[in-house]
Amino acid sequence: MAAFEYFKHNVGKAADLLKLSEEERALFMTPDRVLKAELEVSMDDGRIETFPAYRVQFNNARGPYKGGIRFHKDADEDEVMALAAMMAIKCAVVDIPFGGAKGGVTVDPKKLSEGELERLSRAYVRAFADNLGPDTDVPAPDVYTNPEIMRIMLDEYETLTGTKAPAMITGKPLENGGSLGRDTATADGAIYVLEALLEDQHRSLEGVEVAVQGAGNAGAQAARLVEAHGGKVVALADSHGSLLNPEGIDTSAVLALKANGASVHDAVDFGTAGNAEAVISAVCDVLIPAALEEVITAKNAGTVMATVVLEVANGPVTPEADELLTARAIGVVPDVLANAGGVTVSYFEWLQNRAGEVWTHERVTERLKDTMRDAYRDVADFAYERGITLREAAYALALTRILAARKL
Image (tube, helix red, strand yellow):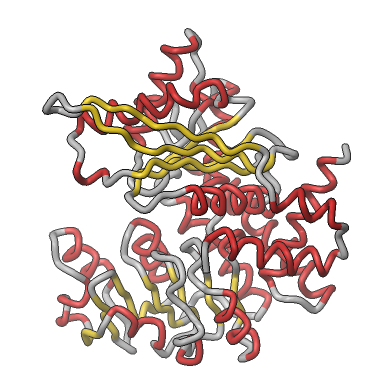
């Protein structure tokens, strides 16, 4: 299913629950603005190459547009539009005053030199500068962009506007106004949500068996946190394969090997190697897809052994799989709630920049914990009162909040 079709499916179900009018539904299906540009970049060998670029501003009823910029060879308008729409939902779910946006450039950044990446980053800001700003649209890092690219984009924006505007972009290096805690915020927020859910079930992470699909930044941090809270990581996977051990994997040791160039399934001293999909069917309490979209589909949903699926990745469960998991009483914590820790700490960075403050790591993590637990409570109560799933509740609650803001 195309990314935007997936979004429309979820919004449609929520709109049905809320009995929205056709006019109200249209507000959530149509972006405010789709900006496009052809970025001309001087390459190191003197050639000029052109790269398609996008910035989709979906909805700003609750505050400035907010969303990352990705550099990826498969980035296209449909993907960027879907992600912008989901950002509007995500910000409303965690009740932070942002709307939704997303940016992308169709490029393979691995083929560019450092200088070419910088020129591409500056060209992006020049193309869209009139539609960016601390009170207008606040970008952030995404796939294959990073704090250094955010620093470059900020520098270009400030040069163009002749202003000092650190709040126009988030995810910056600390020395340029970035926030402590941003690097682990997505996984940190997800684990706070999981803890709150387990408390509703009169459990804690102590002794809980977890399978993590993805050993990048978010997956690795989620695995570390599970272990730190007394849980047991029984399966861990990267793009090359899975490592399984019902007695528990030494995640620190395995991740150290991966950092030195090995793959997870090479660490056979710590478990049994399996193919990349073996993690999906691992015997566990909680399955955390933390890498790619659409990894749980109608074909493999029947093999999921977990009782909870925590969506740290964007869109890892297809709509068809979602229905199959629900029919089997497997709870799914949707991405628009579970992985909203990243944008939440981006909001904290924006607040710090606007006030000229620097928060301690403790202050950031405490506020993140409160925000994520409050968001889970709002969604869980909404779901319980109406007898619907957490995904349906998250979308319906978000639509309710966005509509309320438009009527103010």
